Image (tube, rainbow, N blue to C red; front, side, top):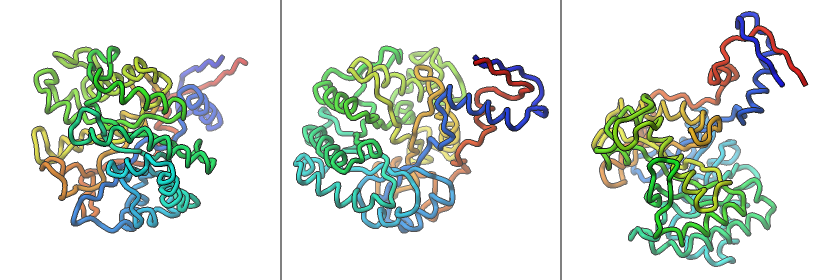
Length: 372
């Protein structure tokens, strides 16, 4: 048992501070590691070179990156950078990788040949594939076979605990999301999704999920009536989402509940994309985007009501504005301009000791008494 007596921070010795920090880490699962990365999309005609991009990540202390295909120039630039990477398998490649031999060759070429000095964290096999979405439904039958084949190739190299294999979904697969405790996947995607969830549980891999409160807000203005509810700045909202802390937590907790109902209660969720556009559509502005990104970075360190105290690994979308995307609003999600200048002043640095202590309202301590 540990008893804390709070008095004055000025009298709190460093040794006690370190012991207290260790207790916080042990109890809340905090490692001090950064939980926020940034997606590096490349659909722009005016973007800096991969080597310049990697240098920018490093200078801004962005230690995690998502890329959407195994581009050789990007992978070469990542060598020795110490940046942890989500490596994407593009949807058009899924059918080929449903063949075990092709998957083994893909892993050898794009993972193992870089493994000595590129830190692969996840392989995202497909992005936002849905059996009921006409644009991606043709890929659905190949997602799970490709995942299994890539996993087997990773396991053959003895790297299955270091590199996790998953896929990235979007929230259109959720049928019911209110209240979050009643979250459930759509009936017409269960045949596709349940075997994937089972595989992830077997492989002890997280599910990747692209969660955009922006699109939830603009698509449902009747029930989500307050922008502040999407910006983590009010804890309740009139209407459909009443008595819920914020929209991001509502969506993520609905996904946790859906996973539980589908046999995936053990799975973690990595938020593989989340962002807010600065122009090009309803409710877009520099101020709105800055507010969302800044508050999201702070918020994901704390978990959700359903899983409190567990930092949510999250990837901001995206590093740059991408002028080759459509529709117009999709061009304006960057946190940097293509000239590498920041659109917003965001702090990507890992939490310091006192940040963590303050996060749990430990503001002063005079004595630390331990009873074993």
